[in-house]
Amino acid sequence: MLHQMQMADSKTELRKAARERRRALASAGFPAALAAHADALGTKPGTIVGGYHALPDEADPALLLDALALRGYHIAFPRVAAKDRPLEYHRIPDGEVLAKGAYGIHEPLDHWPRAVPDLLLVPLLAFDASGHRLGYGGGFYDRTLQALKAEKPMIRAVGIAYAGQQVDFLPRGRHDYPLDAVLTEQGLKVFR
Image 1: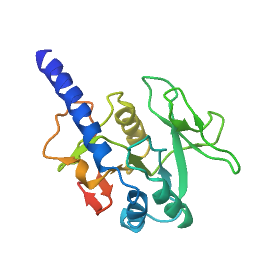
Image 2: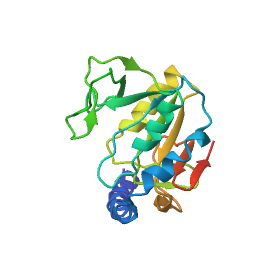
Image 3: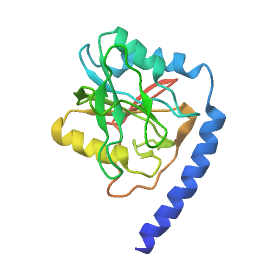
Image 4: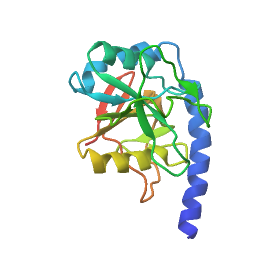
């Protein structure tokens, strides 16, 4: 129990430092630089990509998602169904727009068509050289990856980050799900 509390305190401190670091790394040119690496993801047209709508200072995949859509990929966005459940992914019907959800994040409406991603783009605060990520502490992406892997074992999880968000090591718990790769403005780093 003491080890878990120390890890929680450590992660809390890491999250605060990672937010400050990410804020300093944010740049206007990042989305275009990231989109230039769309082909590095190595998937084919028809693939369902689970994207996300970036929060302020978060590594923004908007232009990457646009580039993937132009290549024939299907884009789905997450919706928070409940606090302790996996995220649900939905396609956006033509003419519709995302709305702010319970956590202030733009998300689809629950009656829009559901989708099960083949490739999941994952926001993060920091990542290490073995593919572990520091998230926001809610466990949404860890629960989502666990549920999606049960449905589609070959799903790939790719973190979206500024290259400067890499750290030497991150503490991890038994529920922390590692990434397969991270895409930065410098290209794709593959871990698995």
